Length: 227
Image 1 (cartoon, rainbow, N blue to C red):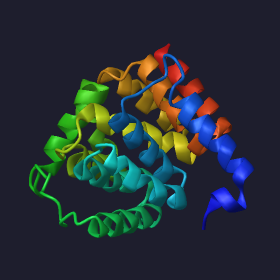
Image 2: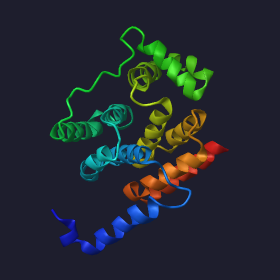
Image 3: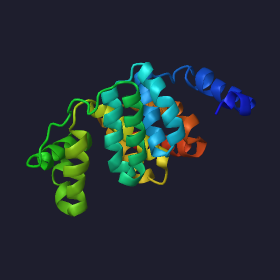
């Protein structure tokens, strides 16, 4: 459908807002790869499949690597669940295949079934501090967080730890209702070098896609974490 014909006034305003105001707001700019990675993660978080399908080819053309996109989609399973992650994996695969990108991509795994817990604990401690070295013992969900969420996904190559914390922040901010976890991961972002100003830029660039209420909630969580 050509929305320029069916909804020209809306397209004019939303295009201007995203391309001229948000993208170019002084002090809120991000490089293209970072901005697209954040926005695609936010679209997964808010279940924006239609916009994701339109934006992914543009992001790839702008230089965002297929590996980075796939790693973002894989990691989203921990924060969205398989039911909400699955459509984004399907869309990503379909677009990459249409563009002649050979699948599967090169492996990014660095753990196996024997060491995933140990390395997951290490990743947690690197982000949240040494107290996480014992947190996995608090119950089976905590153990799953260590071996599955962090051991299976955070340890993978293809994205840096800082990039992984950024996309987690976007998943949580975009889906809403996760403010305690969002505050915790805002703090985790700051621990790996994504400071308050950077997170504010991320929220600013994602705002057109997730709306004002969730963006304002995210800012409140950033400010709380910065305290």
